Amino acid sequence: MTLYAWWLFVVAVFLLCGTPGPNMLHVMTRSIAFGARRSVAAMAGCLTALVIVLAASAAGVSALLAAWPRVFDALRYAGVAYLICLGIKAWRGAGSPIDLGGDALPQSWSARRLFRGGFAIGISNPKLLLFAAAFLPQFVDRASPQAPQFAILVVTFAVVESFWYGVYAAGGRTLARSLTQPALRRAFDRVTGAIFIGFGLALLRVRT
Image (cartoon, rainbow, N blue to C red; front, side, top):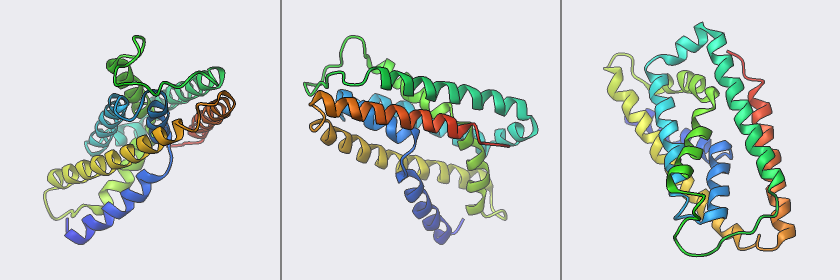
């Protein structure tokens, strides 16, 4: 992989990761609810899932999904169901109070639970697997050993994704101060819920 190809990859991934999607929306909502620092566990969950998906794609799992459409469909429907459930939960819980307090998590929201939620969001999108299979190889020099190149691309993707998590978390915390009014919070939660449902329905359109 040439330095020029790597820089092209960085620019492309920077724009791609900055586009709002399920992971970014999840990080922002966790930041609004618990604060940027306390939402790090959710970021870690999303990022762990992302790295696993990218590594699996580089290892050729995407070819298996393309060869076995039923496996892909099973993952796709699971992702659809999870995103829609999140959307319904956000809609029904609209207007709940925002905690702008200290660093301690509420008893019902441990760091482990936040991590699991972020991981579920990231791992439930099989579209990323197929996208990575088509996207990553474009920046790999086939005349050179491919494993180190794929490793560099995956690490680069993770670093850029982490940067955007921080941006969305910081933005979410700033937004939280404007959502202390119940009417505004209710509207935000319902819009968030509708977006999650929209992501889930959009996933139904994915085809191998």
